[in-house]
Amino acid sequence: MERYTGNPDAVRALVRDLEVHKDTYIDEEVFALEMEHLFANTWVYVGHASQVPNKGDFYTTTVGTEPVVMVRHTDDSIRVLYNRCPHKGVKVAGETCGNTGKFFRCPYHAWTFKTDGSLLAVPLKKGYENTGLESCEAKHGMAAVENVKVYRDFVFCRLNPQGISFEDYFGESLSTIDNMVDRSPEGRLEVAGGVLRYMHNCNWKMLVDNQTDTCHPMVAHESSAGTAVKVWQEAPEGTPKPMAVELFAPFVSSYEFFENMGIRVWENGHGHTGVADSIHAAYSPAPGYWEQMVAAYGEERAKHILGDTRHNTVYFPNIMVKGPIQTLRLFKPIAANKTLVESWTFRLVGAPDLLLERTLMYNRLINAPTSVVGHDDLEMYERAQEALQSRGRDWINVARLFDPAEKEQKNVATNGTNEWQMRNQFRAWAKFMTESM
Image 1 (cartoon, rainbow, N blue to C red):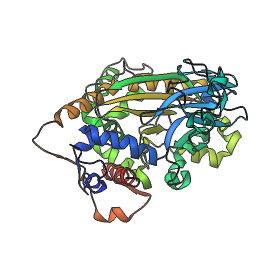
Image 2 (cartoon, rainbow, N blue to C red):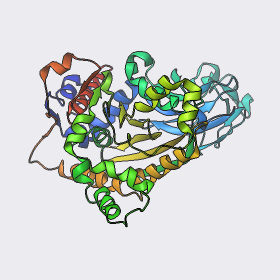
Image 3 (cartoon, rainbow, N blue to C red):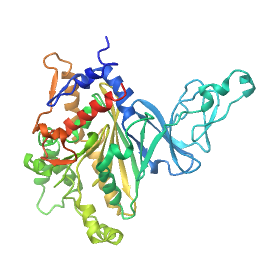
Image 4 (tube, helix red, strand yellow):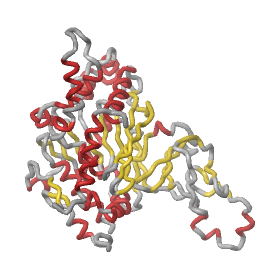
């Protein structure tokens, strides 16, 4: 029996000031509504322009569960097309990436489409004379997503034709992307080092919640990062500190550290940890990098850029960006209890190779299927996904440091262990889930 479809009041009732109903994580009907409404009403990350540097280059992905293809058109613009042939519905671009030249060719019946999606040619076209093809949907070719925004080479789209603008949706939160890009002396990033893909048997929102949950690292990661630190402490005196230890050690920082680190809460579900301090703030300097940044930006501006060491920035609904370490994690929903996590790394164009080396090592140690730290989180997600099926309790608590006045505040910095950002995400969830129902 459908409980939530066509019933926005029932959907909104899943989110209270201090609690969230377990159905938001385990109910397949709710998941289907997320794909229909939430992922269509919000601006969702598609990819990076460096993945399609040349005309005809394409990259296939999903927005929610919708298959799309990002392609560099003949006019050098980036287009996002629904990856579906209008003839028989076959997925046109079957590879993850490649170069299609000046047109896409459907592998089933060889209909061809320009890289803006428009129909180019139909084999045996005479067979369609006097059939009304000119007035059919198929005549219009592969459907294009109308609302696409390329911001500093990060590509976003909004599937619904009508809705909130890109600028209003992200607002001040775009400063995290700005900071990550500005860390390049040339002001450019490029995807480097491939991507790590890791299937999680849990709801996608569990991963989003975790990015600003600062009360778990010293507990969940004690056996992994904590062990690495203990091994290092037992090393002979004078042993150089390995890069891996620099990356592991902050995960077992104290509650006090995370409280003082701070969280900033932005509108529409966005927010970041690491306002006054960060687990990325004490890495060893890369020789020559500071001098490059000063030459590019001047000393004051370089100091401001490199001094802004935000930890995790959540861009709602489903990405997390780490500017100081140049990584992006994309939480791709598959089902209510299944999420594909993609962890991407970026090169700071013009910066020392040591920075990319550190980025790649961080990704392997923390985010890979063979990682150490990431498995701690995954075990917690999967335990939660299983246990939420129980009848014992229906609500999940997100009350830490709640203040009723927060609902009227915008773009605020607060205590680093406040669960305000989680509440912020679910308020945005309820808003964008129901505005088109």
